Length: 262
Image 1 (cartoon, rainbow, N blue to C red):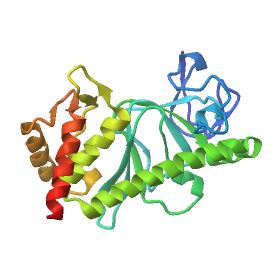
Image 2 (cartoon, helix red, strand yellow):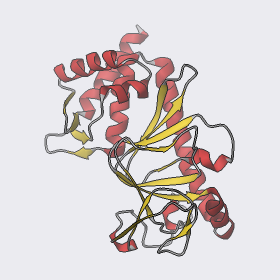
Image 3 (tube, helix red, strand yellow):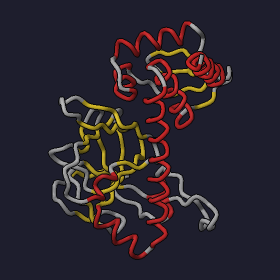
Image 4 (cartoon, rainbow, N blue to C red):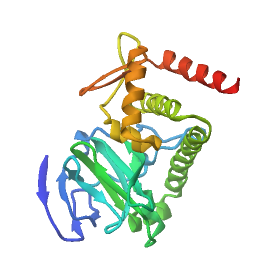
């Protein structure tokens, strides 16, 4: 693996493309990357994977809490998380941040950059030390022109994301804060959780402030609800991560829904 730092807005990388971002870039052979790429051409009935059509790029290295893009320097294209976690937030009218989502390995973010030079009040920062790949809007447009199926694959990703946002909006409209906290934990367990021998699912650590921004409440209320869920045996947590028991937690949500109907 070879590392090099550069500041030019357009530099060649090992894969024959140019990088239009100003960050430390890790150049490496494709074989050492952990990106999950299919070995065969996708069939028409399969969910298309954009990674099958996107070329490897030099890796962008970000330290924990480092800003990737913000209102002053908005997203310039599409990013992929290769290692670590990234949170994307929206700036609301009072200047505070509302957490849009947390993206982990093999997930795309920064798609607002594909809209062109419009005012986007979004910011993205690394939650851990992170490695990213990035393609500029111009590169994505050129790739779609040569491989239209890439456009379909990206549309599928965005449609799935819209459906997920729809479920979150329904939760905001229909559930009280305790229910939103529990449902957000189930969502993260389904996306990034690792099954454990005791039947729990382990997710990486999340601060109570991050959960509060995600569900639209205060850190104090999240702390109170997390303590409640732990006392009831629905989860355990420490600095190393959160262990969630999905089935009991779903039963708790179903019970809360039945009580709300009475």
